[in-house]
Image (cartoon, rainbow, N blue to C red):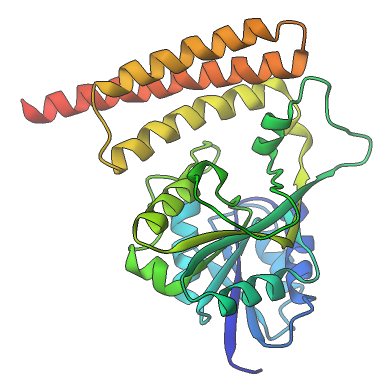
Length: 311
């Protein structure tokens, strides 16, 4: 094989039903320079290893077992095992478009200051399912949907950062900041997030650039269990906790968080009332408000822990 230029990494935890399609979409990439595909098995108990072994005749494919559960831990494990300067992360329940690696590679080749890049994400609905009437455009983003249009955009607002399911990062930047922070990112069934947002903030602060690439397309499977209101409510709770942790890591923790969280909670309820006749927008705002309860809960725990440390 030619020298490895880009390493495609799948971090997986008990998703054998989707994993094969994700791997196949990478192995079949229309990309002539050298690349490898690394599957990081994050302590799965299903058929994950078997799914990989069925394809290990392909010399590009590498399997690694990581016993410490956590997405950020698994991402760091994949990065350490990778040979490429560009690290391209694809979720285990996603499928990369044919030109995914080429689109990522071309962007990094054209811009030496590019630290992070990701692309458009469409949703794949299982047979017989469709978007429920109460699903807003905003909440569809929680399922992975991401579309900033059909032109290259350099991200200045960290809230628009590329989705982690279709995500790439320059190795030298990742090493510069010490890797993905294991305090953020999913761990088992908890829905901690915001690690990509923190990465984007850090990159911009350090003078790097972050890009949305419309041609780096991936499709994300929507599992049936996510089409329940309870999943979105839980997701909102964990989003609030993640936001609190991100602020703590950024040195923004303190009593000011109580005011911010309270104001956002009231704003969410007020907007829910404004959209009382629109089931999708009403539910969207209620999920947001509930997330602020999770945020405030984490803030209070953080303040109590800090006061105990002082004592």
